[in-house]
Length: 391
Image (tube, rainbow, N blue to C red; front, side, top):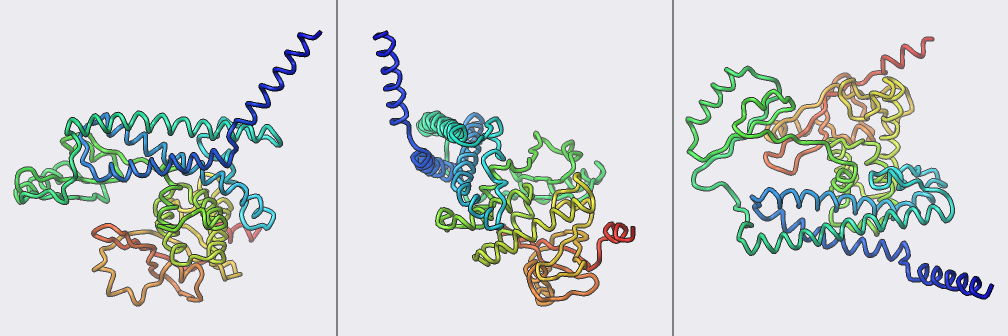
């Protein structure tokens, strides 16, 4: 009996000590912040290198994925408490709880102590993965530096060489491509490069090397891209309410690049909770309307397979403006029209009342040649909705 009591006491003491020594969630989040800062330093430094080693490029790709996952995890946990408060105030639903993102898909969050245990396990999993990746990469970086295989990138091709980028909007015949390629080669020096870009896989047969296929952002990478474009150098931690709304908007845009570029510009120019709340309400309305009109398969708010109907924030009638098509122009081509052109902010939140068909300036790329991305729009009631209201 005495031995049983002694073992029980020892078990309880060991359990108490383990619980006492275990880091709290706040401590884990601080550790995650420090590790992510180290990751950013490595990634930003590596972006300035010209790396030819394929294994190193693969490791850097892994490192970026770990960084995106880490920041997503950190921001989800930081916004979770705020999200619960905002749910009570009917501002933002709690759909960005930890169960929505990839690392936590296998974790079931329950109420009470089980939830805390699951969250602690998730944080430890993310922390451990990032630590391991940093250790592996530090060794590789030192090896490559010593071997001289990392060189600082030159600002241009130099030596009279030319880089030609051709964007193919439609498929072209092989004979047409051969004539175009032959004409281009006759005008450029040896060592110059031609890059052909298209949304079609058919152009792969024209290339002299393996094609590079661009993939959609992962959920974590999309959030990092949207956050950086929206907040810039502003500390996200200093604006928890805006961060929570931004996470919800990123979820609603469903990894759409154009949506992130356009909405982030609006948010950055209007850094206030009231404007962000109106923008969030507008995105929710677009999502609901697409589901109402086309069903679940067309629930993506920026899918152009069907016209996109958008209700204005300050308009109560059933009249909507509809995005019929999108296209791009060079800045020089758009400037003469600029005074007459409306912005997305004018359409969504302004008092402008356009008639018939009109053009809208959605956003401008920050990279040369600084394309302007435009929408061709009109004003009408959704036809599907009209048909339904007659019954």
